[in-house]
Structures are given as structure tokens and as C-alpha cells.
Length: 79
Image (tube, rainbow, N blue to C red; front, side, top):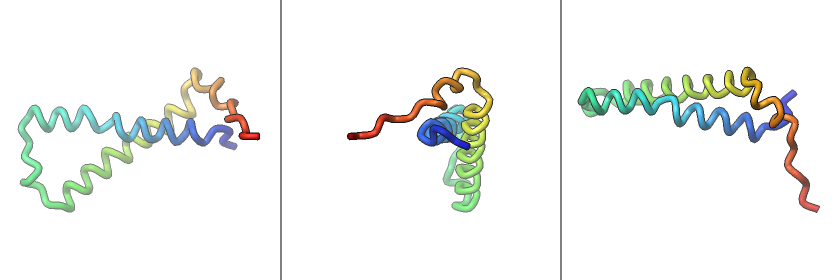
């Protein structure tokens, strides 16, 4: 049972947005021309990188011991 969905979504988003960055830097430094790829190949590459980063975020959420204390935290109700 997930106690803190916000933390899980945060880990997934951070993983998805930070994992592809080294690959994009490598493509920029090696002068890869994106116009040489078809739209389908660009979409497939971007989707693969984002999903790979999301998977890393999920693994980080469930395996990191530093997040154990944060998982039990609930936001306070507005009363």
C-alpha cells in the first residue's frame, strides 16, 4: 500500500526528467543531427529514455532507505 503518492510521483518525474540528460549532452557533443532521424525514431528514442528514467525513479522510491521516513508522512488536512 502506497502511503505517499506525491513522493512516488515526484521520484518518477525526477527520474524521467534527469535520466535522459546525459544522453542528450552526448548527442549534442558528438554532433548528432536529429533531422536525420524519422519522426518515429525520434519518438521511440525519447519515449525509451523517459520510460527508463521513470523506472529508475520507481526503483529509487522502493529501495532507498532515506525515503522510508518520508513515506509515512501525510499532508495535513485543511480544516
